[in-house]
Length: 117
Image (tube, rainbow, N blue to C red; front, side, top):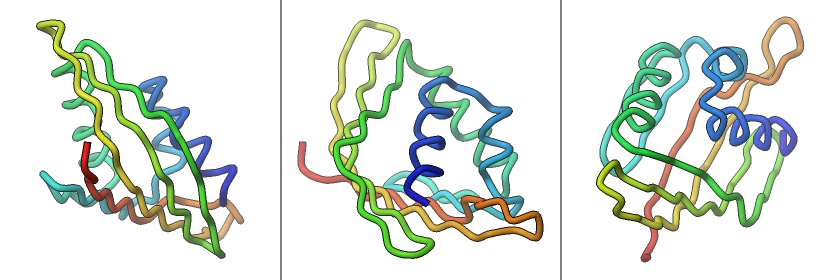
């Protein structure tokens, strides 16, 4: 699942909605300190809102810890807004995967926790 998590972060950074559709399960849930949304298209739309509202959004992966179908990622989110301001967020992601009937690991849950910056 570690490799699948790396694929997820790369797809997010590349704003690759085709790859994200492949990675997300149909019933994926995203919960962070601001929103909670469920369903593949709703989560992708939430991703798009963040990309469109800012000049750049980049996730840097510092550490990955995994056990079975769960990956815990220590990440830095770097945001440059359209006015030139910069934000650096320290976040812990808990990613839960489920293997589907075609033996593909699908991301079913993304829980994000904001740390101290």
